[in-house]
View 1 (cartoon, helix red, strand yellow):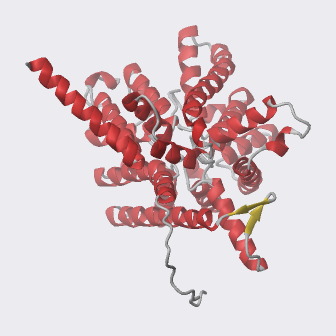
View 2 (cartoon, one colour):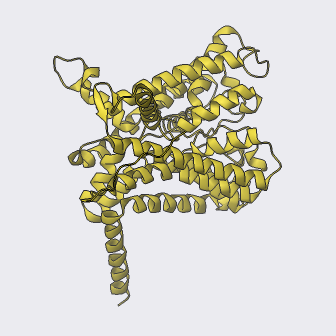
View 3 (cartoon, helix red, strand yellow):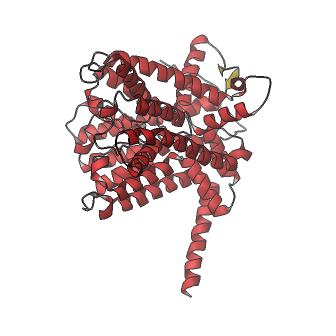
Length: 464
């Protein structure tokens, strides 16, 4: 009797999940992410998760779990010293699962529940990853394989560096693996005591941060499209076969990355608290690392609190834009930014269509870009207002922290550990919304497009 009852409950749960997966995949994605955060929070709340064996406060456990699963890197306690080896392992698992992406997780769960990905789920995943509907199942497998391969390569590069620092093989392997996953997933967590400050001039560690962060931030669809173009043997060069999403992502991300490296390097070159005290080659490396991590990873080799206000302001804008769609980065995404810029240019020129790389971008895509940017701005504004009300801190540091949380970057001026619990909950909600909100909203809106037989008369209100 008991077994029958349990079987019935499991069957009902399975049917409910299957219904949600088929009819509301965006809701399923949010449910999956929230459930993972709840599990990680529970594990971090165990006494075994802390170094001193004392149960962590709920606000700190929830904040750390959300930051890990949302691959942010903001912390309320020192990751290296506060958490035990078990706690570090829990955080690493949260980073890995979160880095796979909310849509990929939803697809995996949909496969497990219904043994196949339904049409609605395929449409949602295809909308997010810019793939054809028939490729979604293979995309999930390719994403997992690609992430494991890149993380493995980063681990092989980093482990010898930690060995040269006098660490045992086991410790070097653990530090190399943790840093590899943190870099590629743009997570921003560091379990090295003292942080990355002592490695500001270390090219062996700095270059993997730059390269791994950039690869993780451009997005899996771009990685797979580029790899596919090089596998195919045709007369045209590989880059000529890239789709519009890949071209927009790589060009926009590359321009913003180059601009951020040059600008931040120029702003901080003579700052005695950051780059000014370094020799030339270390200044170059610091510029590369800071210009890259401000987009998504948050793995800073200089203290963000010591940056000049001009650098803070530039960083706010760069963090808000973020990285590529369906990537481990956050923000409104570079393709959203690119579409908005292209729409402005087309309007300024008087062009009827928004075009890029010989392709026309539809009005639906432009409306989605506007919606995502407006939602992101609204979330940042509301959270900033809330923290200004809860604390006595100045706007510049709060705005930096809020955008870092929304864009899942993880750079901090140092105010997060001192926030009241209510402030920590605000940033936790913002990290969750920043990681899942704009993406699921864009996909959900894409699926809700309606065709109307009767259309209202056209009229143009005065703008500007």
